[in-house]
Length: 124
Image (tube, rainbow, N blue to C red; front, side):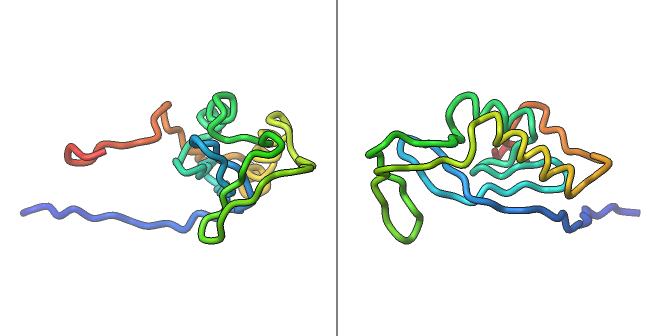
């Protein structure tokens, strides 16, 4: 008997909200938070890794006055008198509450083991 490679798929619910990525420049993007605890911030990460992305400035909650914010497919805008909704601490709390709202028992949370890439057949 030969074996075949198969896979299952499962729909994981989530929410998306505006966020800012600082990758050289500042980019308005959708941060996606899923019921399994994964967060997409241009990289799929778990909550501890998201906290580290925030601490290191990959995800930011504000940008300097007069800096440009790039909006994909639209262009860039200069920030003149911003009023920011979140601090790093409040963003973490918001993400945690979002995960808990999607998964009240916090069951089957994904653990990335500190890696945001996976190698498959020698390709990352």
